[in-house]
Image (cartoon, rainbow, N blue to C red; front, side, top):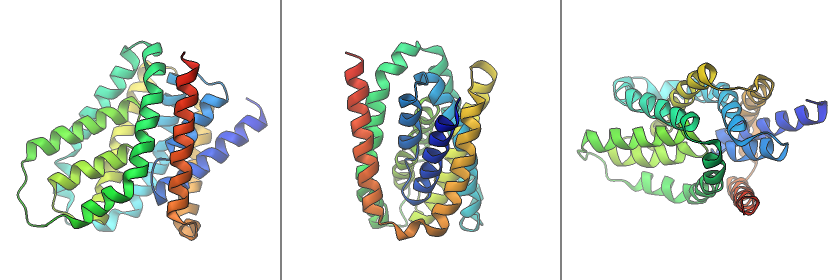
Length: 252
C-alpha cells in the first residue's frame, strides 16, 4: 500500500467518523473508497467493520451520562443485537462472495434512502405519544433483524435501529441515540470476532480506518456542528446513490 492510498483511506475514515457523530452513515464514505481503490467487496466490508469499532466506542462514551438509570432497558436488548450481529457475520462468510457483490448496490441504495429519510424518522420519534405499553417480542425481533443487517453489511444500521426502538420503547430521542450507539458497537464487535476467527482481514486498512474514525469522531463532536446538517446529509445520499448505480452497472 502506497502513501497516497493510505492517505485517502485515512482521510475518508476521518470524514466518516465526523459524519457518524453528526448524522450517521459514515460507512457510505469508507466502503466505496475501498472499492474504488480496488479492494474486493467482502474483504473491504470486513476490514471496514473492524475499523469502525473505535469510532463506535467513542460514541458510547459520549452518551454514557444518558444511560445512567436505564441500563436494565439497554441490557434487555443486548442479546438480540449480539445474536443478530453473529447471524449477519456468519451469512456474509457462508454465502458466495459473488452474491454479496450482487446485493451490495441494493444495500448501499437502501442505506442512502435511510439517510435521506432520517429527519422524518427523527421527527416521528419526537412526536411519539409517551406512556404506551408495547410488546417486548416485536422489539426484540426488530433489534435482531437490524443486528443481522449490521453484521452482514452495516451502513446506516443505526437509522434502522432508532426506528425499531422508537416503536418499542417510550424514551426520548437522545436516550434512544445512546442505546443505538451501544447496540451498534455490540453488533460490530460481535461480527468482528467472527471475521477475525474465520475470514481474511486487511489489518492495514482496518488500522487506518480505526485511526481516522476515532480522530474524525472527536473533531466532528467538537467542531462539526458548524457544518449544516442538511448539506452533509444530501452529500452522503447523492454519493451513496451514485456509488450504487456505478456498482450495479459493473455487474451487467
